[in-house]
Length: 531
Image (cartoon, rainbow, N blue to C red; front, side):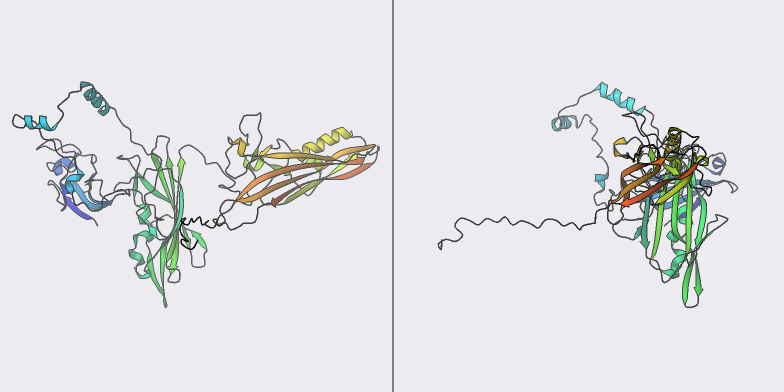
């Protein structure tokens, strides 16, 4: 609940002790520059202010709920006026005080100042007084050290009045709006919200303004504010079709009567935050995307999805083939190790890391050199071409040409087990096992005829959300013997490449704890006097 008072030259009174606090009022009976809470300032003084030096004044931060005063200036008024707003601020910490029944415990006890009347009494109750000049000097030195505020990992993102709220489910599946968004913590959650459809226009969590109106502080306790910019708005109809709005205006939920049914339009279904930060721990940009929909009485309670991602400034996100497990249809991550002890070297184009021969309508092998197609996870592939043999071409030259055609340029030595595997974790990568098969005949030309690649993968992790993991890769080069063509004669052979994916997952077995073993010992005289 907020209370807004307008004031010109008097100290506003909001019915709360925090309204009388003014930490920037340093000069008695004199107006301090840019001190909006100073009672000595008048409208003439406000006209030369640039901004409020202390925009937010709060009480004791140990309380879970406390009063806060927000000061600002209205320069459009003539003369300029001071805006005073009293709000209820909720602490993001779970270690806070709800009710205090012993107020002296919230502060230190004021020490008794020694004088000529109580000096002897204080000497008896204490061990005496000692002076340490060294500690005094070191304490003064620590106060002089300047500190630069910056966000650290896991710290709640501050806004102009509180913190950036990121709804999530805590103890149940219901959405809790008081959960703070933490710096550098990427999240994607789904939660359920119980709503009364007839009151959907009054529920803040269903409106775009609830998520786009806060302004994030660039750094903790900073005066620079970063507004949240709406980048895209998608509209989902009742039949699940999506339409992208050309503008990004903030829409409000609207209740519509459709015969015997009630519909609520422009309801927020999904919210996606994208925050850009610097290496100094500052937030520089905040983007927001919405998915709005129409809710009927059939789908109540409502399920919402919230996502937040952090991107570092002047860096490009690295595309992955899965996180962590591979996704069907994405290319295999592969590379080679130049020497023992080094990391895995990969090409920047992930669609060129693991490739095979590409088939064309002409099927001419000599015209296909350098034309490759990526190996996609889960896709069984087969390609080939035709090669004409004449007596004018030496067998050894043709064999080398076909081998280069099958392997391509820079065939990898290792394959990543997961779609997000790091190149520096060499021991986690799966080495490719190379096998060569040949069939020799006398007076014949031995040429590579096929390259068969077999990828074995398994389901890794939880049964509820298994992740695809590659465990073995084999590349089998099969060579066959062909009679050498005499001069003037031609022979056409088929060169082929095949990729197969084999699921080697073990069947899931339900696990149970071992039954308890009863280790009971009877007393030695339990059967006395019968035994």
